[in-house]
Image (cartoon, rainbow, N blue to C red; front, side):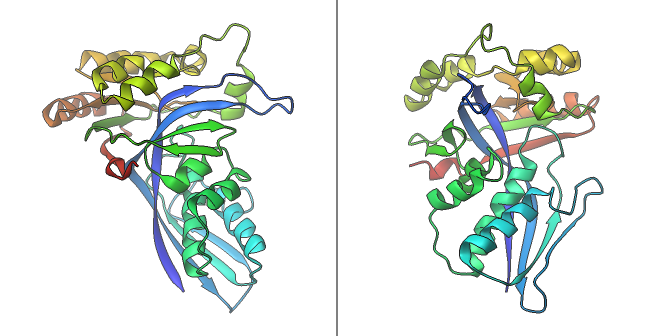
Length: 290
């Protein structure tokens, strides 16, 4: 049997790491959204063999055990007690090593797809728990709708308040950032934390102009200090008319938001002139907030 799943990129409207657990894992507190920049993941099961085979249109993705989609297939098969061979094809559109959660979203797509194929009827909550064993972003990517994400990534609380139909301009500078290296640079004694309570209050009250001002990413100064072009790109987005702009994840991708289509196109046209890997996209599943 074969199914197709869309693996949507994620953005961090906010990102905080309040403290470090004793085992060295980060505690997270984030507001995340999915955007309609997506990989298309085809998942097929077969009785012809018992291998896990991953193919991709990308020339830089690992296609072995290092691939998160591969890991998701192996873990899901083990938990479900299946022996089928699994064939995965990833039509790659989300940039790699960009802070957009592309690998995690591919893994989540595999979890959802195998859940459908094998008619396991696992809830989103159960798939999220499974996904956490792969990567901290996988639980959110299982849901792929606006949510507050806490803990090690496993606590996903979809918003009750729908977000406005935002236009999003996403731009990835020509650099790749190592997430583990950035996280090792975090100094919890001196870190300036954002005001998550104020952001969530503004969002829940549909006061989005205040919400834009409360957006933050505590890792932006770290990655931006190492790669100044990230902060310069953010400033340019503001100059071109963005209502808010910031880095996503550990970077290097920077995004801008606006509610006006004309302004969005103006920002996109300006940014794409000097950042070739730029995209004009919309939010996904905001109307499904509950």
